[in-house]
Image 1 (cartoon, rainbow, N blue to C red):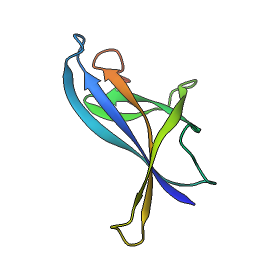
Image 2: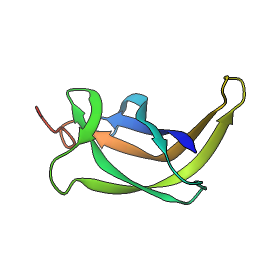
Image 3: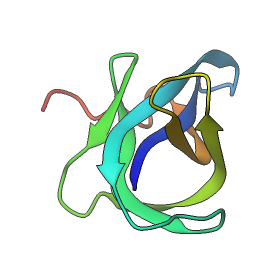
Length: 99
């Protein structure tokens, strides 16, 4: 089955004040049946300036839990979205610089 995998990312400053909240798109992936509570292994997320990107440096993998699965029947063909647990990135701490 094909899934669109998404994750809410909250970007905060060093005082934990919210600067923005974005829905990061991990892309569409073919996978066997997923359910809430499953784990997905992907790259950690980081910031390149204020843009959320994968941190592809060595050893920067992370396991995320599936918290919701949405079937959008209003689209043709129907879309199945998988939402991963949200993450918070701190400007200055989660900057990965230039890749």
